[in-house]
Length: 350
Image 1 (cartoon, rainbow, N blue to C red):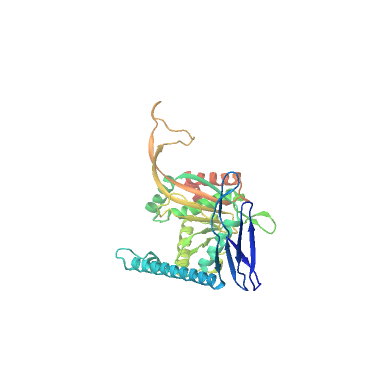
Image 2: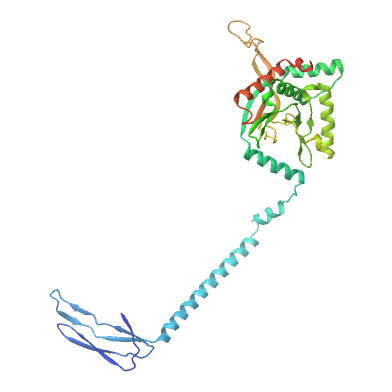
C-alpha cells in the first residue's frame, strides 16, 4: 500500500500502463487528507504475460480515522495498565491477610535498636581505624609453659599470703623483656621518620568499662615489684570503671597488654594503640600432653624407646608490632626474652 499526501483540491488522474494492458485509476487528493491507493495485483506466467488481472480498488483514510485509531489504542493501554495495578494491589492484600506468613520487614524494624555511642567509644573507634590503616602491623606468635608461673603464684600465696594474679606477673615479665631488649621499647616518629627509643618502661593495660576500653598505665613497671604492680592495677582498674581516671593515668605509655585469658579465648591479634609500636595479646592457659623437655632443650627419655609424657599448661602470646620499628630480629629477640622470663620466673623478683 502506498500513501500519498497532497495539498491540491481538485482531482487528478493517474494512469498505469503495462505491456499487456492498460489500467486507469483515479486518486482523490484533497487538502489535509490522507489518500491510500491499493495497486492492482496481476498474475503473470513464466513468460512475463498477464494471465489474470484483479480489479483495482481504492481505500481512502481521512485524518479523523487515524486519530480515532490512535486514541482507541491509548485507551486500551490505559485499561490494561489499570488492570495490572489492580491485580498487584489485590496480591499484596492477599499476602498481608494470609495467615502464617510473617512480615519480615516489620519484624526487622521492631527488633533493631539504635545505641548512641559515648564520646570515648567514638575516639577509640577513630584511633583504631587510623592505626589499622596507617600502621604496618607485624604479627609474631609463641607459646609459653605456664606451670612455673602458677607454682610461683601458689607459693607466694601459701607462704607469704600475697595474692597476685597471672596478669600481674605477665606485666612484670613483659616489662623486664622490654628492658632487656630496648629496641622493642620504642615508637615511630612520623614527622622525623625515625625510631625513637623510650627512656622508661610504661605498660598500658586494657580495662573494659561500660563507656569503652580504657588503658591505664603502670609507669616504670620494670622497677616495681609484682606486689606493687598488683595493687596499682587494682586501683587503676577501679578508677577506670568509675570514670575517675586522670589524664596522666591513661595518656602515654610505651607498650600495651591485652589479656583475654579470663575468657575462652586461646589466641587473638590485637590492634596497636598509637603512637606505641607494640601490643601483646594474651590468651588463656590450656592443659596439653607433651613430652617433657629438659633444661638442655632435649626430651627426657625413660629408656631408648619411650619418652616420658606429661600434662603441662601452655599459654599463647601474639605480638602485634609496628613493622617500621619491629623487624623480625627485634620481634624475635623480644619473644625470646619473654619466654626466658616465664621459664625462670624467680628472676622477676630480683
